[in-house]
Amino acid sequence: MRLIFMGPPGAGKGTQAKVVADRFGIPAISTGDIFRANVSEGTELGVEAKRYMDAGEYVPDSITNRMVRNRIDEEDAVKGFLLDGYPRTLDQVEELDGMIRFTGHRLDTVIVLTVDPDELVRRLTERAESEGRSDDTEEVVRRRQEVYAEQTEPLIEVYRSRGLVREVNGIGEVDEVTERILDALADVQES
Ligand code: AMP
View 1: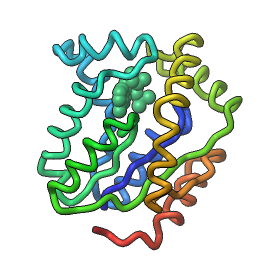
View 2: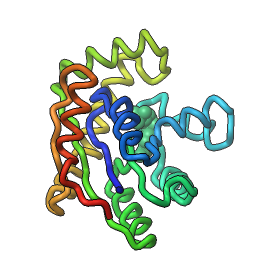
View 3: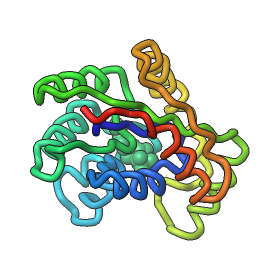
């Protein structure tokens, strides 16, 4: 099973990705989480990534692609994976295509979580208070939404043209949204 979760910052991708990946027995690979882990460990990658993250910008493709390539080469990802927050640029789409092709598999489905913009800002402000993420200030939140609209939203059409996109309403209780996602994945054949 090779899945991608897409949706604007604050759509609930991370929460849902973990639950859904668990159901399928595959790892949820979150590029944001890997960057944050590197930031807190103070690695070279973390120091480099933090500059971009704190500004609400994307970490350069060369860095991000290499990190994902290494991660999906790990043993637990051989049987599949759920990508949360990757790909986010056209270059990353191409890189991912290459990585998956190399393993002789294919991408199964792209789940797009939809949430209206006002709800997103409300959620992100709330998360800023509860988690204290340094990239959840109002200015950075706004920039992250813009970057998503400019660089990542167009990817939905790329995957739609391949017949891979399933949109899921991301508004509601966590369990409710999980059920919708599982329904959307019910007939997906494992590759
Ligand atoms: P997230 O937790 O997925 O919202 O990611 C937090 C931040 O990490 C983003 O705002 C970016 O700065 C960086 N990031 C995460 N995934 C990517 C990616 N695929 N490409 C570039 N930057 C990323």
